[in-house]
Length: 394
Length: 230
Image 1 (cartoon, each protein chain N blue to C red):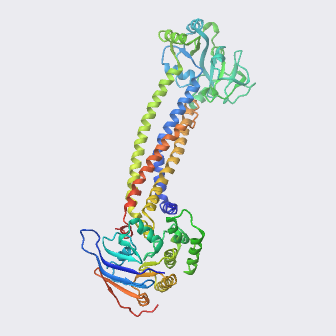
Image 2: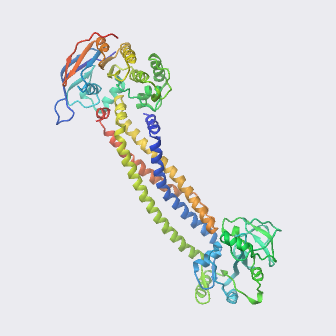
């Protein structure tokens, strides 16, 4: 038995309505797929970016801002400055293994210049020079993989952290023209916002703004590697209130990702409702269009086709649309997640790497299962049609 | 060789609550003969042909083709009987427009087999050639009406049927095609040795028939030939 001759004939005949149905189903399904890919991509990529950060301490204020600025180099919220004398006290704390000041100030062509201390390379193991070395003296710079500068280049920084084109134009007029940085190394690509960063000793940023080390003008945050886990919790508790605030980036990000997961659940719920509605609409239209197929059902029966042949033909005709729609929906969803990731990367600098996972195919299998079962309904109705009545269009 | 047809005490209605639509106390048709079925529109010729084709249950009476009693066969057995024994030609051709002429002829083979063996394929090509269809790979929708009916006849003959049923096969054709197609169908039935029951208004077909049956108000009677030319 080969029902595919009639399946192909039907698909040819109804190619426009079939394509419309397929796309409708595919788009409904793609919403869930996109939400799943995006949420996992953000979580995994965010966790990757935060992996080297044990504890960050800053001036009193938002812990979320503190984490987003130090981990993702977010530049749209300027952190309040932390008193450097407090930072020095913390650095002397016996529970601290390694620490580094963190100053986010100027920019070069919109790429942030980050002032760090000598302990920074021990804090961020994932940042490794591909060529050259870590800066040792003021105004030496180690640039990220996406910064268009090479070892030996010199550049002048712009004042502040440029965000918009208008601001950039304004910044161009406020270059620290008389002082230039010299590139001494380039970092390996990390897939994080640090690829667009320029690292330099934090004292460079003090000096360029006319401060001396003795003045101790303040830093954005202090990055800390505690000696051990009890020390980590103790340090966080000690510096959480009063003149400072502290946060475990992993903990803050986990709560943010939890929020994202809630959004994903809401989007998935909407997507599932949309899918069910489209499923129901498609099944109803399949049932409504069934009488238009009675003539060929009658023809096939009069030529000797059994009910099973009719059943399989009708089932496969609908099933093919559901199967293709699932596949197309998966691709559309993945593309949509990619576009969302690009938009987010452009906005935040966080490179979201979308990966394929075996679990991505579970919604597809569920979609296919529902489709294949739903396709049984018109097939069963066609199966029961009397050959004579079908032929006479009764 | 064609099968003889015997009908006994056939009473048929559209549903249990409706009056009898067809009442045929008895009928005999010789094997291999050509039977013209005449009657006004709506007299029930198509319904009668579908009953002869075993396309519905026969709750009362018997329709027997050769030694096969359709009224005692299950739905599945009647399907198999149609596949093996019957050829059907329709008034409006009933081709699948999206398939080629050749695929339309071979379509019944796919009811039982996944692929089409060489024998039916060469027979289909031979039938199409014999019936004058040149564009065998063209989509059925692109054929002329005369070609479409030739393809329909070729399809009905593919399985070397013992029984051929034709429901006003020339009604949708122009005069020239009407003559040609009628002649081809009658010749083919003779050559294949099939028993042909043909519902027709065409006088010449009626004249060449071995037996004329007239259906009126649900009753079947022997009719007369008309003296038309073919």
